[in-house]
Length: 196
Image (cartoon, rainbow, N blue to C red; front, side, top):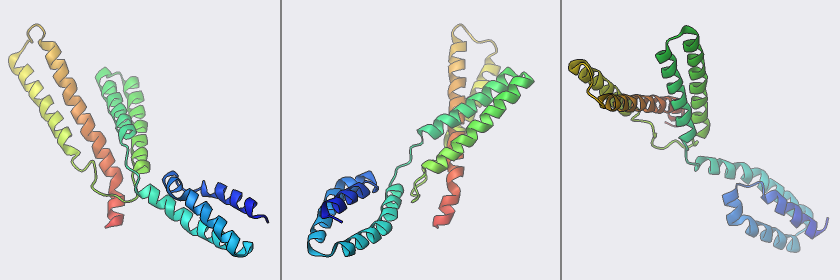
């Protein structure tokens, strides 16, 4: 087998490494192989190269996965959609629409949990959703205060309905955010037990 062919095949095999590792060390790996092929028998270099690839490829991919940061945007969006669908179903109140909305909310919440588990890095550091209950409690307090104030004042003045609706929506969003973060926190709990 010619040296140029071995180097060309190895250059393609280096593409199997994670991008960051490949960008940092790919050229050096190919140059080292080329130097080794000049000094040693080709079969020995190829055997050592294949053994090295078999050992280092999984290791480098595992490291890249462990260093990956968690992106909770999709998880939060799915959770918010699940919460909004459930709220719409309850607000409409028609049994068929309520059942459909709750089914959609259940599927969407399940997808949020699956996405949270998939996006979670292997090395779990400080859990991002550890204080999930704070926005949920704040939203409940806002909604309770809104109900108490509107009950005590009776009819709302002109323009007061807009403030009440905005406050109610803010309270619902806080509760929904707390529930989504709670789902993320719940999804990450088994990993923390395994690492301790």
